[in-house]
Amino acid sequence: MLLQTSSLSFSHPGQSPIQFPDIHLNSGDSLLILGKSGSGKTTLLNLLSGLLRPLTGEVILDGKSLSKLSSHELDEFRGKKIGIVFQKPHLISALNVKENLQLVPYFSKEKAQNLDQLLIDLGIGGKAKSSVLTLSEGEAQRVSIARALAVSPKLILADEPTSSLDDEHAEKVIQLLKSQSEKIGAALVIVTHDQRVKNHISNFIEVKA
Image (cartoon, rainbow, N blue to C red; front, side, top):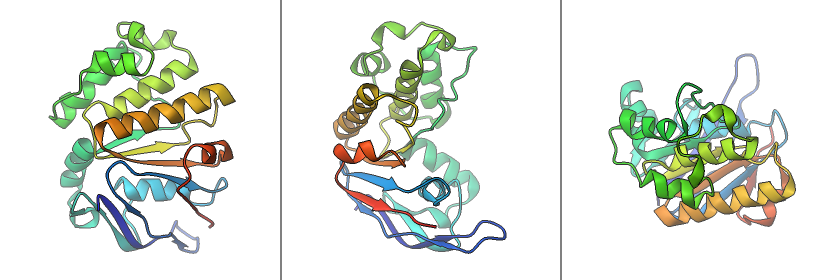
């Protein structure tokens, strides 16, 4: 079992605790976390990545309980094991596309995939030396996916990756996430309120605050 959660809950200040369903994923599995805005689905994503610590329960990834790691250990572990596709790409404008990807192995001290081939696989091979300021929204999203995959993580977490995309581009992004995660043997978790994604990933849980 690559990813396992049990009895997870979290409480924002002044709010009632949110209880989350248990998750069990093997390498290569895909999971949707569905819920309306404010339901707690992004909170669950942050618990899975160790960016938040739970009120109760634990997250075990690749045999490690995240709550037992120090902040420094957790930062190192996250850099090696987890790739995150944020809702907004958050690319560094002073660097070109490939340089943005090269930051991941530099900081994580992990061996990178073939980054040129990764960009080709994602359909943006010709953009490696382009300024990120010249990218379309869809291209920037693909660079964000490439960055998350750069060091072949065990777990890929995607936060609303299709929310601003039309049907055609949304389908392409989901297929790219699925195919790339399968290629490197990673588990894929997508947090979304976009019901279109259910057409491509049948395994899902719903979060209701």
